[in-house]
Amino acid sequence: EVGDNAGMEVGVNAGVDVGVNSGVDVGVFAGVDVGDNAGVDVGVNAGVDVGVSAGVGVGDNAGVDVGDNSGVDVGNNAGVDVGDNSGAEVGDNAGVDVGLSAGVDVGVNSGVDVGVSAGVDVGD
Figure 1 (tube, rainbow, N blue to C red):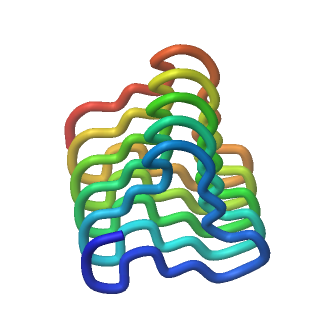
Figure 2: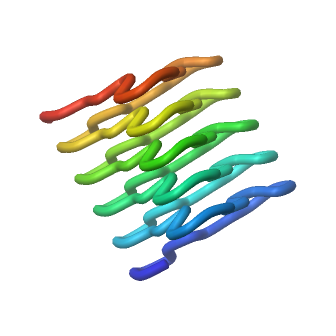
């Protein structure tokens, strides 16, 4: 974790990282996880967050990333997950978000991506 307040984790099992380079957070407020099991990253390079407020997970099981390179967020406010089970990403390269506010998920089970390269978001 690199940057101001990077990797702020609050809650039961928040920010559980398993795998090579999983949960790599770079930037101001990158990887802020709030809630039970928020920001659970499993797999190679899962949950790689780069940018201001990248990978902000709020809610139970928010930002659950499973698989190689799943949940790669790049840009300002990329991968903002709010709500129960929001931003759940399963599969290789699932939920790759690039750009300002890319991959903003709000609500219960919003932004659930399953499969290879599912939920690839590019742009503002």
